[in-house]
Length: 161
Image 1 (cartoon, one colour):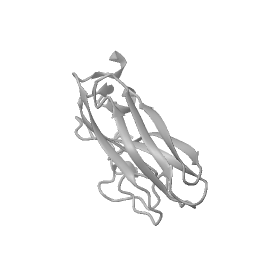
Image 2 (image 1 turned 180 degrees about the vertical axis):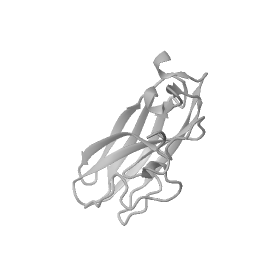
Image 3 (image 1 turned 90 degrees about the horizontal axis):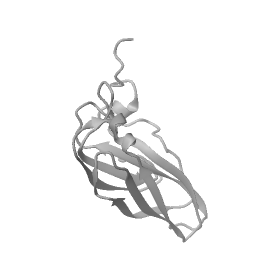
């Protein structure tokens, strides 16, 4: 094998065509609402980590669990990258009518791109938080929040951080 790109080999790289059963697909016995997505800091140096918090509320009548998923999208990159990349997830039990605030760390290495070696690049990124992939169409409604953050500084090899 000489071509190691994933173009056309995995659904993460298929243009606009959505997979039949995307990651996180399923039904729930209740409904959840996401709110208050906060990225800190909103502008960070190229080697810094990002702190993410989001509030998850069980708006239904049953106690249940939700798999909270965080996805990252590069708004511009020097090399081909997935439409979005899963960077964190957590299964959370929430009692009916209650809410919980979740915190995550998105490490600098999770923003790295492969360009003959792993590199960190400056630019604008979008982070998605919700119970499914961004843009996923299912019978069970689940909202996906999004927020942008910026990375400043010069591009550098990941091992240089």
